[in-house]
Image 1 (cartoon, rainbow, N blue to C red):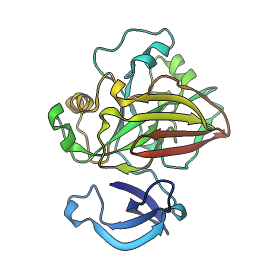
Image 2: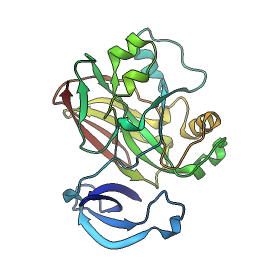
Image 3: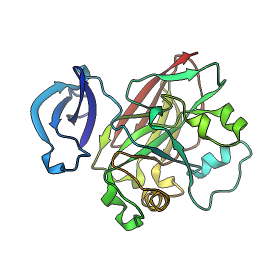
Length: 265
C-alpha cells in the first residue's frame, strides 16, 4: 500500500495512492493518522482526488533522521582517501528541519558552501516506539519505505572533520513521494539521475549492513519513535549539483522522488 501525505486546503491529510504509474492515479483520503495510537480507527473517508492535482508533502515529519554512512563497499572506495570497510554501522543524525518532500526545492546556501552533492538512498519509516529490537523482529517495527536524498555540503564535510553541519541544512533531506508498506527491502534497485542522466545505480542487496541489522544496531543506541526515518546509505556515484539541476531518486517497487536545486543567500 502506498500512503502519501498531501496538502488539502489549509490543512494536511493522508491518503492511499491508487493506480499504476503511467496511468491516471488517484489519492483516496484517509480519516485518522497512520501513526496514531488507534490504527484501527484509520479509514477511508470516501473522498478521492486526481494525484496529479494534489501537492505531495514529505510523507512523515520525523522526530529525527538517523543516517548510515559507508554502507556500500564501492561508495567507501570512491570516498577521498578510500579506507577500510566499517566493522559496524557508521551513524549520524540529520535534523527534522532538513526534511522536504516531493517537488520541494533543494536550497543551496551559496554563501556557506561551494559544493552540494546528491546521495540517493532507501529510507525506512519506523511504525512504533521501540528500543533494543533484535534483527528477527525488525519487520514488526517498520511501517514502510520511501526514497531519500541525503544532500551533503561536501566541502564542509571535509573541512569540519565530522558530518553534522554538512548534512543539516534546511531541505537537505528530501523524502517521498510516499510510503510503501508492502515491499521487501532485501534486493531493490536504486537509481539516481540528474537532469535525466543516471549517476548512481545499485541494489540494496549490496548493503554492507542490511535493514534488519541496522534496526537492531540503531535501536540499541537510541529509542525510535513512530515516524522516525532511517537512511540506509548511498551507493557509489555521488557527485555535485548546480543551480537548476533536477535530481531524481527511483527505487524499485516504491517510486520516484524528484527535487530541483535552487540557490539561496
